[in-house]
Amino acid sequence: MRAETGRTAPTADRLTVAPDQRREGIEQARGDRGGLEHDPDEVWTEYADSAQDLWTTLAVPVLRAMLIAELEELGLHRRSLFAIRAGERVPHPRNRRTLTEHAAAFAKTRLKHAGQVPPPDDLVACAAYDKLFSERN
Image (cartoon, rainbow, N blue to C red; front, side):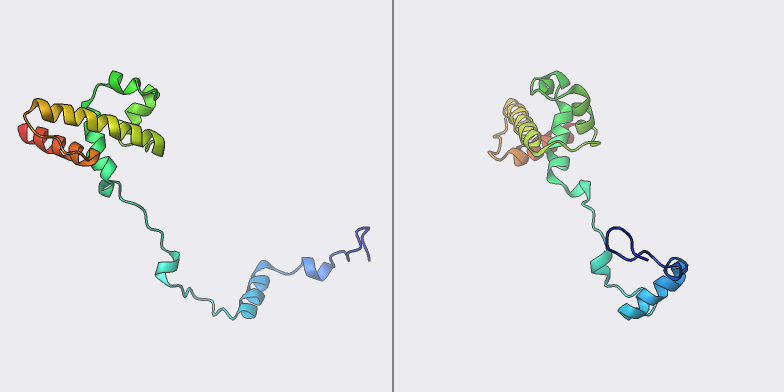
């Protein structure tokens, strides 16, 4: 029996094959033995540890020390800023750069007021700020 498209219509024996029988046929055709034989490196998914992220460990603590009003001047939404400071959200790379620059400027100013020479690198300045002020508390 032919359909209007020129293809043959499915026959009854094709529709009544049990799913288990189909799977067995596919496994036999591929040469599967029925067990899982995979290289763990091919199937495991690695997730980045946020504790190892330099931005999270160095810049975010400085952002927490800043007033939220200072950060709002950057044009980011207040709720987003709270979520970023809490570590619940990672900002867009462009916003992340801007936040890092402002956190570093804040850290460098505080280091100067404390009589320290601030490092030129932004994340290093954040680390120096965190080290200095965590030792005081």
